[in-house]
Amino acid sequence: MTAPHDRPTAAELIESVREWLERDVAPSVDGRLSFHTRVAMNSLDIVLRELAAGNDMTQRHEDVLASLGVSTDAELSAKIRSGELDGSLAHVLNSLAPVIEDKVRVANPKYL
Image (cartoon, rainbow, N blue to C red; front, side, top):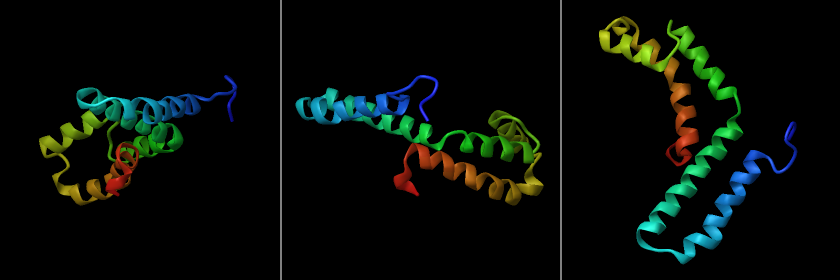
C-alpha cells in the first residue's frame, strides 16, 4: 500500500539510492570514499529492513518491556544494574531473546 503518498514509496526511494551507490558510485571510488560508500549502503539496508518489519517489532518490544514492569530500555537497564531483577534473570533473558533477535534481524541478519 502506498497511500497517502503514492509511488515511489519510501522503501523504493531508499532502494533506488542504494542501487545507485552500488552500481555507479562504489566501482568508481576507492580508499576513504569507498569505505564511506559501503557504510552508506549498509545504513540504507538497515533502514529498508526496519521499514519492512513494520510495527510488529516495535509492538513486541513494548510488550516485552511492559511484561517486565518497565516502559523503556533505560528503565530496564537501571533495574538490572540495581539488582532488582536478580531473582528473575532467567525470565528476563527469555523475555528479551525475541527482542534481541529482532534487533539483530534489522541490524545485520547475517549473524542469525
